[in-house]
Image (tube, rainbow, N blue to C red; front, side, top):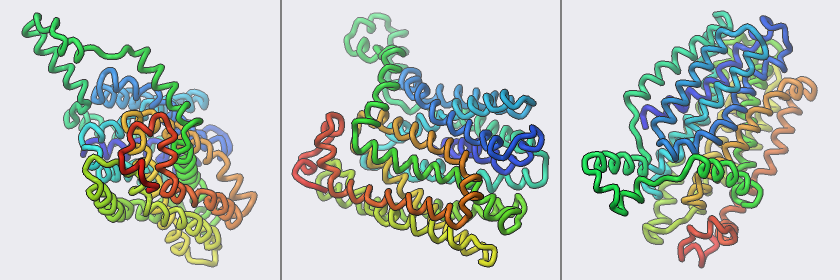
Length: 452
């Protein structure tokens, strides 16, 4: 696990770390800032599509080979982005960098379920999601020190060095965790020692696995079916998509608000302003301990086998209300006459609510769908990264055309639409799960007789 959390962080750094270098990129290639933003967006779009084929491959070959091979291919394409001098080639390389970096997005939920029992996934999941959500602002912060003092390509070389080092650690520190893969490996060893065992039904059943074609058919079809037919997945996807979109949009927005057109800060100082979001997200895993204690009490009171996803949403209710408050606060304190620390505090509150709601939707979906959660979570990952890749494309135009105050307010008004989601899940979650042909298989007796 300790080898995978920094790896998860680095995946977001691959995307957001380019943002402080985008001005230098735009000058060298002679393109507008909007086109330069494609360097961020193409990587995030790669995150959306990569898990769609990496997840089924992990079911076939195991977690470890997919982590090592996919991340290694990501490094090769990252090397290509540092060397290529053609705009089209650069953007293609950025897309494939994100595509193969998606191994953590595809696998971390499965890795956690491999290592912890269902009722004990809350805390490890909170730290994995801390890395996934903190990666965007911390990547801008860290790489701004290079972008502010060195040529923009040095940002890519620095990322290659960091990610290359993490890949080496991964090779030696990580181990296979998928239970069926471990059982198959053990069965193959025993059969190799005693070939007569291959006729034993127990060994024959263990060694049998679905074909790659079967796995891809399930992996590519079921997530989209869930997305359009399962209300819980639809709610969770909208929530995660919105917040990931805002997270990457802020890479450009904060550059405008605090940069030369706003408070007049340089690249490094703008990077320091991202520490507000980093701080807010980092508070999240600690406040989640309160939610986790509540969840464990609910589970204990109903028996250790009880499945109570509705016990995951209480902090999410508070975060949903804080979300538009933080955006209004940020929007109307972006004036030059107001000290920037006031708006940075607003981004800290936004960061906490962002993290808390993403964790809530992830855990609620995983609890609700059990054995089908990989498909449900794949749908969430696809939507959130599509949003994350497209939102930055209109950040500059929106904030410059509408003004910082009204652009931020538009985001806040739209965030109000998200407020009811955790309340709906708390009140009507059991009913929604009972109507689902997939989630209903994981209802307990207590769930069937309760509305949460």
